[in-house]
Length: 183
Image (cartoon, rainbow, N blue to C red):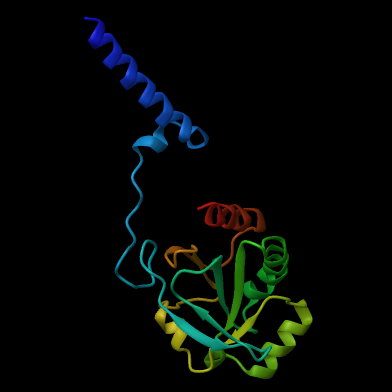
């Protein structure tokens, strides 16, 4: 009888230690399984982000796809797009606010635009985040671009979390960024 009590106390002690080690995540963390990494690539939430590399207006080349230190926000746009004009100040603010946890790339789909107009847009809105030039439209096509802006939220593992067609209010966009970088 005493032996059974000691065994029961030992089990309770071990469970207590396991719970204490995971206390910051709650009891559910003990039983929670990690989400498996997707193996398929595609322009859809839950799939690996289609990879691309583009040269930016600053002369550097930036890459999307694969695991990174930070989450990535990609905004496909054109200078003549009225919603893009409305969204530009908010993107500039959010890029600066979350620069330590988020890389924001503006991708000018130059096949639907002119480089001089894109540069004028960047100057007018004083954009401070990298502006990539998709001169042949390949990157936009990889994400099945249908409208401007098309915003893609990619977590640090390289998995698409959401694709947003059109604009959202700044507070809603910021909420989505906070969810993205919290993972």
